[in-house]
Image (cartoon, rainbow, N blue to C red; front, side):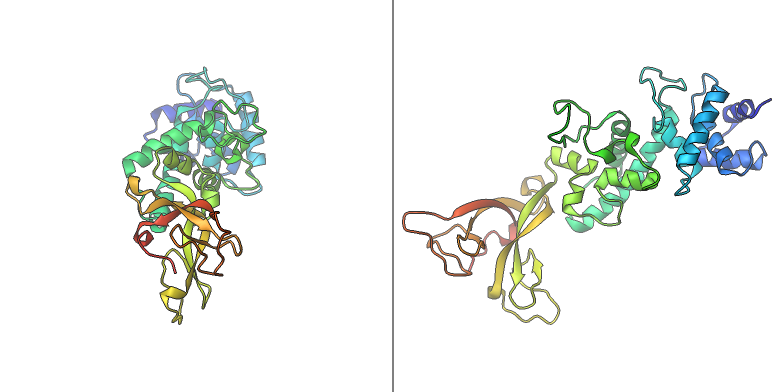
Length: 331
């Protein structure tokens, strides 16, 4: 009995709940050696369709090529098999459900597990940053499964470039939102999923990068989160910037009246209408120093005392303002 036949029998009789457990089970039983290549083979056997046998020659060639291409960063054998199962490194027929040349159902669920892991961590980061976005575990799982399918078939983030050949369709132009674009020499699969979710694989959230992620697209679609220019304040003493009109810089004793209004770019905000703390307002823009200030009478820049020409008004722009600051008068 060849190795694929033995693995097929093991797959049908195993009670392993996860692919990694099955690989360890096969290693302990002596069905495979402990080499990386053989562990990929066992993972593929567990993830692949159960109704039809694999073509040993074609499948082995695919596994060997994928193993070589993922060797530089020592990608885990399980992740190599999962990526193959959802179409990385091979062409698949979307209609070939339950067959080896289609998507492998267990691999899709494994990718969904990766997205759920990333969403749990990202939700925690987001909660510490903005505080007003609530994504419970049930929604996290639903989004994880949605993102997993879009990761394979094309997402609906809507971030099409001008060069996109199909701006009206669902093909995504952000590379990290597609498994087909994964380069294992640049990032592990888990990091690549993190990039897809929040725009960065780092343990942080940055407004401009986060707006490139799949989670932001979903939250924006439901008007629960926006990337915007926010009204902030800069201390004239220490240069500290924040959304508070009072300086909290260490050893700074400046009076709040000495705080100047500034624009804080690419901030993430939750609208008041969605339970958040920010509302959109308009601010005048000084024609001399470019400072922003409230729309009021008399019109004049509090920073440089600039006054517009008689019969004219300063230019204005929309900014997002923290609700607790909306009733505060400018100096």
